[in-house]
Image 1 (cartoon, rainbow, N blue to C red):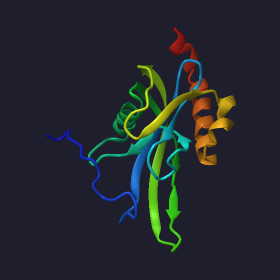
Image 2: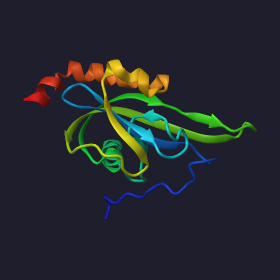
Image 3: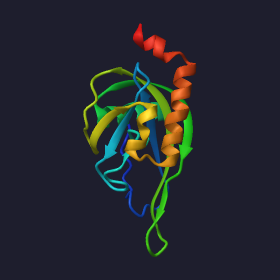
Amino acid sequence: MYDATYPVQIPRRYPPAPLVGVAAAVLNAAGQVLLVQRGQPPRAGSWGLPGGLLDLGERLVDGVRREVREECGIEIEVHDLVAAFEPLERDADGRIEYHYIVLDYWAVHVSGAPVAQDDAAAVAWASVDDLDRFHLLPATRIVVEQAHEKWRAAGEEDADLG
């Protein structure tokens, strides 16, 4: 079967190549963004967007939907790419400990109540005006703000409330 996908089987820590990930700034009808608190390294305990590694053979948009479903238990409609994010961390010896290439999309909530699952320790809806309390990475905050602008420009607030 050609539709099968396979989780990437290379180590996340000290990988032999950069790992491709996907994430989504998911917005609800009120314009709040869904944030997850990381339960695993790197950045365990920090807040960010739901996402994870793309499976081998998986299309980007399908990976975004799967990752949000696995981490938060909700269904989404994926829209456009917002940004590419390249977290790269070196250890004390200068070796590359983590290297991801994450493609951030914006999406809208379709159904389900978000619940922390998989490697998420917690989930929260946050207004764009209330992001400071989550201590997001600067690049993540920019993605959220850009996604919110795209959501507003698309008129999603009216579509979701109808």
